Length: 234
Image (cartoon, rainbow, N blue to C red; front, side, top):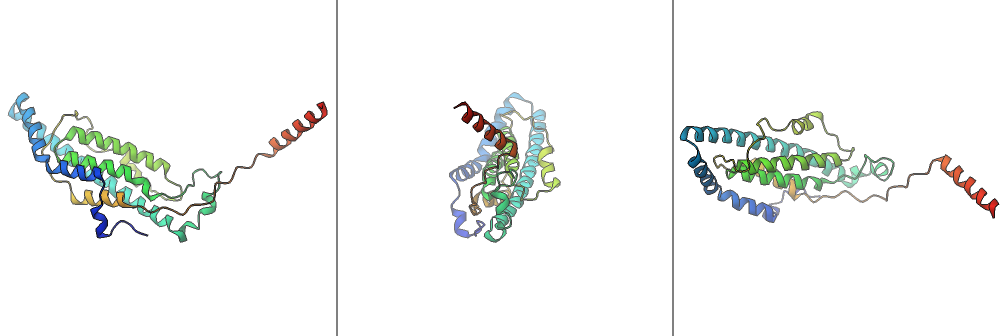
């Protein structure tokens, strides 16, 4: 089973990832244009204050999404382990039981979409688009929550791993769509985590179709009574 660590797999990034990287390379120009536009409306002192505030928010958001990617990657690794054919045998009977709705098949690929959006957010923050970056962080958080909600109960998740997602970033999430900050580089750790999550292709073995829930005994008796009554009327 592969975990996306081969060198040649690094060359096969998604179109969205490549486009984001190209945007990041132009980040300095984008940030400069936004800051110039802000400068025409504000005095130097207020502009500097907004830039410093924007930079602080950018850094806090970048740290937050890095921590979220770490958590997602850790949980994804557990799903990869649970998807191994040997480990999967321990749970296949539960997975195939329709009555155990919380026990579903592991799916390590479920984390790719949230990781992709977090990566997009990181590139927007790095190019100076604070407002757009914040919007994408919120979108990624919502996608991550949906992913955790779908997670099979086979995978253990600690309260600490969920706590930060529930509380959100430390900074205020009130930036306007056009708010800017100084451009910077996307942290290497963020890139590596996001791409490692997105490269995963492991799938758990298929299990027999979920068993149909057996009808309660009283419904069977009711059906028999109805059949007898119908027969008598004939």
